[in-house]
Image (cartoon, rainbow, N blue to C red; front, side):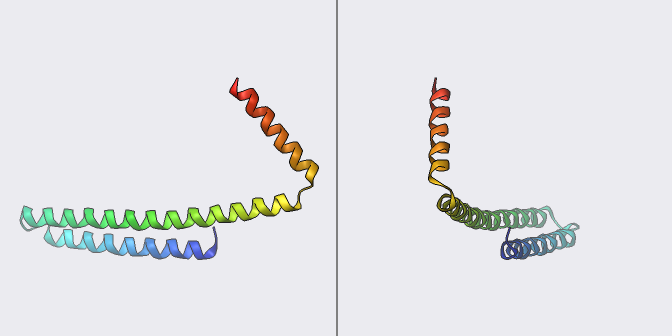
Length: 103
């Protein structure tokens, strides 16, 4: 992963930790109070977890997209640098294996 991606993930994880610590502290304060308040705290914690999961999903999509773009660039560069005979040989082997697997 690139340094930029790692920094993004670290920022998101720090935000998630801060949210969870705040929710835990809130839950500890309310622990002696009524059950309604405790249920609200649990609901808040659950909502924070959902928000954290959504943020992680967005970051995962960005990371996968960036990695896919890097893969495409690498394959394109490799194809441009490879000799024609090598590319035809690999393609032919792929066709042969595909036909053998389809039987």
